[in-house]
Image 1 (tube, helix red, strand yellow):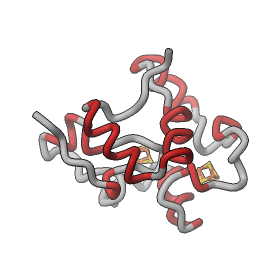
Image 2 (cartoon, rainbow, N blue to C red; image 1 turned 90 degrees about the horizontal axis):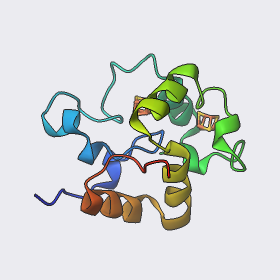
Image 3 (cartoon, helix red, strand yellow; image 1 turned 90 degrees about the vertical axis):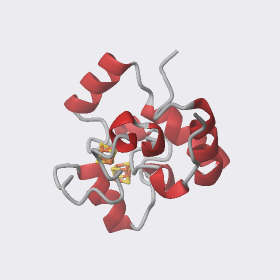
Image 4 (cartoon, rainbow, N blue to C red; image 1 turned 180 degrees about the vertical axis):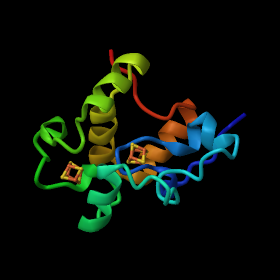
Length: 116
Ligand code: SF4
Ligand code: SF4
């Protein structure tokens, strides 16, 4: 089934929530609406800075992995288990824009790019 492409469903850390099975099953409202995710420093930081995603961050535009809020121990474990590459996803957002990214991820049916 083809997924809908909605830029609002791109998370602060670069995931496409519209392709996440938890969102699709109604078990999570997606990053932007997930007010319960008060544990997430990335979500708080982007909101405070007025960014949609870390792709807009001027402080770490050279390498988002250098941000300690972004590259936590949990993020490293998550990336290892799921072979996910949120940095590559954010680079794609920076290059194409959030709407085109949402469209591409909806077409691929994946919430995040995979490590090669
Ligand atoms: S880790 Fe944080 S920023 Fe990323 S989707 Fe979850 S709540 Fe949103
Ligand atoms: S890269 Fe780090 S400092 Fe920049 S918006 Fe994301 S969490 Fe905040």
